[in-house]
Image 1: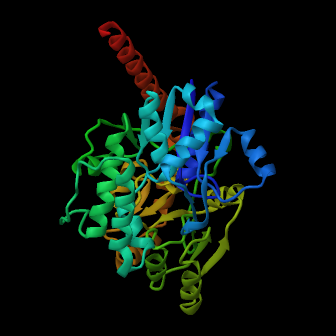
Image 2 (image 1 turned 90 degrees about the vertical axis):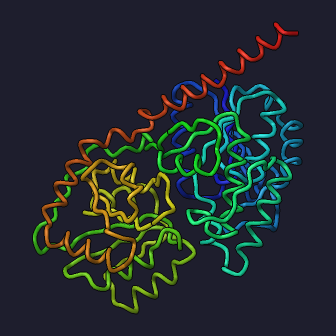
Image 3 (image 1 turned 180 degrees about the vertical axis):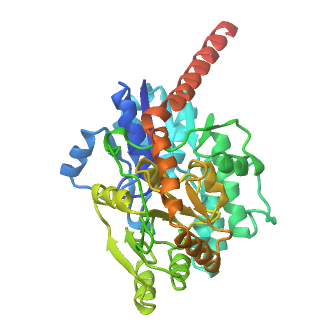
Length: 422
């Protein structure tokens, strides 16, 4: 099978979408399939382009000076389509177009699929409604969301209009982003999503396709061979780890507030960076918290640190859909701390601490209760270790391949039916 990935979140970036794409590409290639990736990118030298070409990764035309935060911005979808047809005529010979975002490169992939009669499978990764309110300053959110929605509607029709409500679209900006997400999904031939809870939200706002669930997986090649059972002894410091983005939506600052009133010994290792890195460091220093910031760190070192920790922290609320943080924790047999009840879908029952609410006070209460009952760590770790092979990408890729094969078969049947009628 010949598969083309299209994504605006891949080259020059880190994060869950990138990790998910890499894991799926590696497993599909191991199974003998051909995978190309087309992505927006910062400017590249010819040497770097050649190195990427050896991996079948191709930067599409992108803006030289305009960036979306730290994300490369693609050129207009029409220009990308023309560039692909001119420079990569083999683009017409793929079996599947696999789309991973909702901006210019991804739009181009959806439109080319329609024009070339190649099935398109759209994976809905994230909550763009929360993203726009987390990244954009308050006074500009409506303008930015309306502009993005307007731009998107130039290339993909918007028959569904989401109005402001009391559920998830409780501002005009959020309603505009839901309008964009839903119409983007409906333009594809097939839609997949990593979690059931996000699929329900998409259906609520008008996604008409059946949404198939394909959970994010852990690369087999990086799977830790023999992670230890985690045990917290009485009076031993609770070793916690944070390896999510340091951002507003991931809520590192509320979690640090929760640490101010912990009744017991603890240490938090923080890996990675993000827009609130400096705020987090200043807050920790000012309140004399027992926190070490490591910054961007190679994967192997982070994986080793996860295995040595008692508790993996994910403090996000009403944002994440299938965070790789939880997948990585399960692979390492490490219990997790969560605030969002939707995250219970992702990890085994009784392998996590769920805060009663997302507030710092509630998180403090949950951590203090854990310190008063340290034996819970070992109980949770046993469950994680027992179920950890479930997260392997090799155990999860079959569902994706079934979707691809079904899409190809339906397209072939449609061609045969048309030829008979003509």
